Length: 158
Image (cartoon, rainbow, N blue to C red; front, top):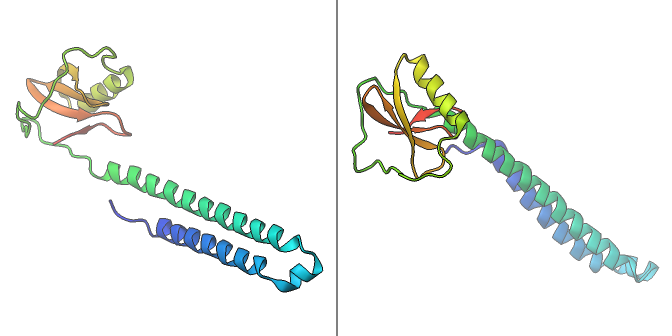
């Protein structure tokens, strides 16, 4: 997965914000000028500086995580493989069928799989769910293909 520079910058800003909150709270707690004016001001200012540093740091970390997740979704769409008809890289040992699946096939996944192979003018004989969520064993014109239909696009797993 490629790193996103914006997410890295936001993570760095989060660290800086938390550190700034800690340092500024220590300065507020030790400020003798504030303590002479009112003895209750340094703890209040110190705690508020500490809390604001942590909250803003967590916000930066959250935005960075959202960007990383979106980058991961984008990267999934780049690696879609479209193998040639008649070629199969699957062996019978690597395919693990589940004979009893109470949920069966998700209707949306079934529709997407039929559209995917229909666009390629290929006939689907059967769709069998596997033990992995969103992954199906599809018999296309006598050839078994392992297909993932859980994301934004249907893709054949090599």
